[in-house]
Image 1 (tube, rainbow, N blue to C red):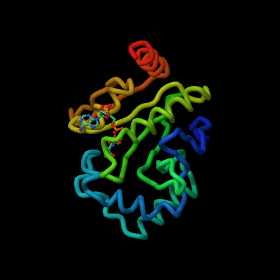
Image 2 (tube, rainbow, N blue to C red):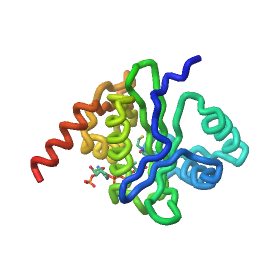
Image 3 (cartoon, rainbow, N blue to C red):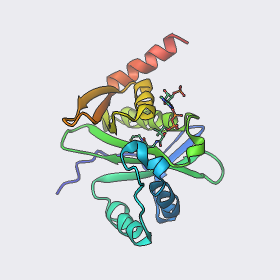
Image 4 (cartoon, rainbow, N blue to C red):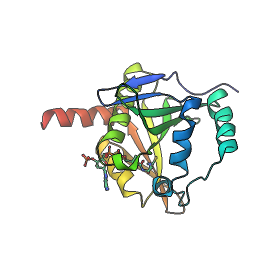
Length: 188
Ligand SMILES: CC(C)(COP(=O)(O)OP(=O)(O)OC[C@H]1O[C@@H](n2cnc3c(N)ncnc32)[C@H](O)[C@@H]1OP(=O)(O)O)[C@@H](O)C(=O)NCCC(=O)NCCS
């Protein structure tokens, strides 16, 4: 099967964050975050994943060794050690020019400091400028008010509410993103 993903960057950075492709050395961080109910509950996994080492190895084989139509990144602080603080997962479906994102900041003491916003905006600016994609989608439970506030403030709109009423898909088109930037620049 042809990989439908557009060409995407291996590394994106701004002053505060670095987004780089995941490697096996990231496994302890990912395992800690995925197993933490406080991190996973807002996305719809109230108990956390509770992955053991074998689960982590299987996950890396499936999603990193054989990329399987997805790009998995780790979000790091832009410090000398590039300290991992979260993950960023990009997939693609049958809609050309669009990617789907999932994000978490696994270090909960860093929530509310703008790291997720930095990561999403920096990544969006890079892929939109490259011409390889013109829309980003994200799914979340409708009670995940923190995530909804974050995505709305970047310029995402609700595209679809799922039939069970509990989940929604939000979309950021390149045009909406550029309009959001224009508004910010012109309102100080
Ligand atoms: C959702 C999540 C990624 C946000 O990360 P974060 O680094 O805390 O987010 P930011 O600090 O960049 O927040 C940016 C914006 O989000 C919104 N926001 C943040 N906290 C909020 C809250 N408690 N309620 C409502 N909106 C909130 C605000 O608009 C904020 O902008 P502001 O700082 O200008 O007010 C993080 O809480 C997380 O990892 N949650 C678990 C996983 C998840 O829910 N992922 C989203 C679905 S894919």
